[in-house]
Length: 313
Ligand code: FDA
Image 1 (spheres, protein in one colour):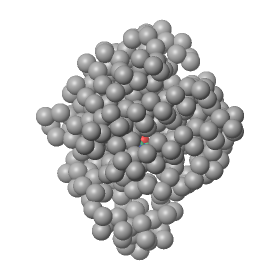
Image 2 (cartoon, helix red, strand yellow; image 1 turned 135 degrees about the vertical axis):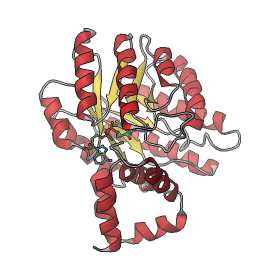
Image 3 (spheres, protein in one colour; image 1 turned 90 degrees about the horizontal axis):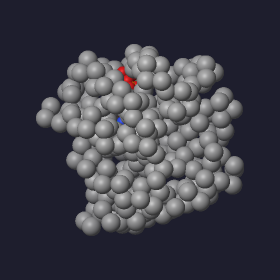
Image 4 (tube, helix red, strand yellow; image 1 turned 120 degrees about the horizontal axis):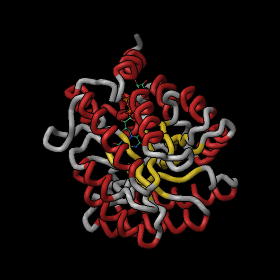
């Protein structure tokens, strides 16, 4: 979050739920070229091509089959099937060692009536396929109303699939306690700043507060026995993680840095070349709208670029 006024961010994220704005924006030819910066394509083949290209530069990947806020059980089953196909293709391409998958539980139907069991069932099938193929699954973090459910489902999945990971968002006041809870041996936690518009009661609002929380949470994870995955593009956070890892005696390979596809790509390559383990989050699919709007909301320059594309100036 660098640093967009919280009101503007909130308005933009709210606008992302407007069907009429979405219909207008996705029809404009310029939208596709702006989206392509963040989403390498709509098909599994596009995604595999991006993953291969990252691998050639020493980068690993985590793949998000785009979808969220599913409204029917059929949609949830289709997302599950998309992941199962993706894992089959990753395995056939021999890419399971360097690519895992990231999953949003709302895409698997957790928000539907009786959705918890539905999403858990689908997530189990995805974890089982990933385990058979020799790769792992990480549960994405969505807005704060979903955090308890996500952590509960994580605990159930880890009984059968101990390598299942989850994302924690440093901006939430609760996250230091969640980091403590998930810092034990075998735990895989991706720490990010947080991308949703959240109220004061649950989340830090200023850049300084979020940065301080990010460093504090990184410290808890790096001091623990799990496998921390520090997801940030922020040079200050990367330097802080580096320093903490040194202080806490974390050897290279016992944690990793993560960034999003298309953001600070040169830095991703530079860090990998310097010996850091770096993983890139690669989203693909036709349902890119919500993901794309969150990337715009993170950075004023993206907003200006998209506005110029939209209004032809
Ligand atoms: P910050 O926003 O300060 O950015 C630092 C610098 O990075 C900027 O100055 C700019 O150079 C560059 N940058 C960052 N964002 C950019 C953008 N959108 N476009 C262009 N440049 C940009 N969030 C969430 O709520 N749930 C989740 O599950 C995840 N998952 C996730 C996985 C991974 C691998 C990453 C890297 C991030 C997420 N996020 C996420 C998003 C995260 O919460 C956060 O919104 C972004 O990473 C931006 O925060 P930074 O830490 O990068 O700092």
